Image (tube, rainbow, N blue to C red; front, side, top):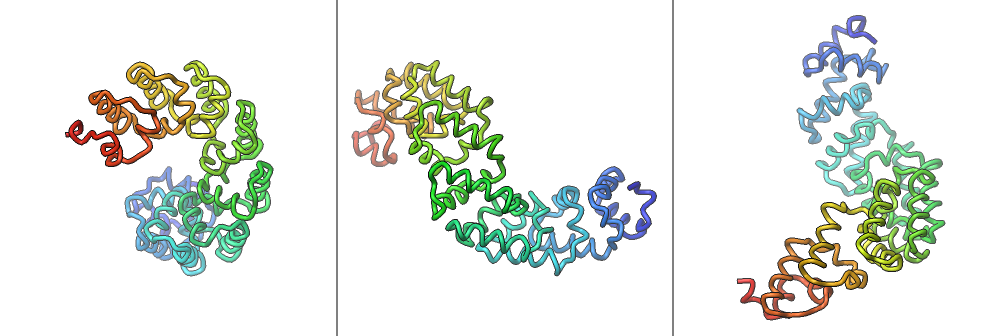
Amino acid sequence: MDVTSCQNGGSIMWFFRDKGFDDKSINEMFKKCKRLQGVHKERASENWSYLKSIGIQERKLPSVVSKCPKILALGLYEKLVPMVECLATLGTERRKVASAIARFPQIVSHSVEEKLCPLLAFFQALGVSERQLGKMILLNPRLISYSIESKLTDIVNFLATLGLTREGMIGRVLAKYPFIMGYNVNKRLRPTTEFLKSVGLSKTDLQIVTMNFPEVLCRDVDKILRPNFAYLKRSGFEDRQIAALVTGYPPILIKSIKNSLEPRIKFLVEVMGRQIDEVANYPDFFRHGLKKRVELRHRLLKEKDVNCSLSEMLDCNQKKFLLKFGLFEGLA
């Protein structure tokens, strides 16, 4: 709809211009939401003020409204207030509710009775508490727009095929990484699990990976998982060792080769003078910060001419490490 032909120009048009929107942005919003044509300035102002009152910064409101123009057409006490209040009662902080709305304003266009309540019942059946669901929605607000029948049930059924039980295990995975529900089973989740099986992970290994780091299942096989696997092979790891590494520390397949894996392996071999076999037996090596933990502790041990395994070196906090090897003088 063209701005100049808007019959309601004397009302909503002046509201938009007063808020700093240009004609192009206004036209795009009218195309997105036909209901804006009948919205009066008073309702738009009321909704705008309410969004500001719950903690959305004024400078962010134009972006929020541009993403979801319908937010200005919704009934304040019929839609906006009930959804905000309901999200707040799920044990979440109001500022986080405001942040979720700013990221995905469409969340407030859904009905509490028709969408949020069924969603709550669905997740409670999987062992997810109201408080956990509140955190999940605020972390991934798009969750509220997913269909229970065609989207969420599909994800749950897929996780069940991996051997995860519906009585708690699947719920823990979804609560741990709510973004997994945004991915397509056939296009993303199934290919990643098939790839993990192909590199030697057993069914039990796959369950461990899914429970501890479900985000690994969400990464692209050809763009991320396969290149990381190939790098580990080039570094000298055997297939069985890579399977052990992935099971012990799944993010090894999604970490940056250049910024994470390569510097650590290079330091291990060239500076520490250790064999990569030792890392295969201690995958948590890749979990520790290179400069703040690995390099510092290696230097202190070298100064004292102390030899120890990687796990002895890294599997303790700084105080216990210094006490174990009598290194307080070296740190000073």
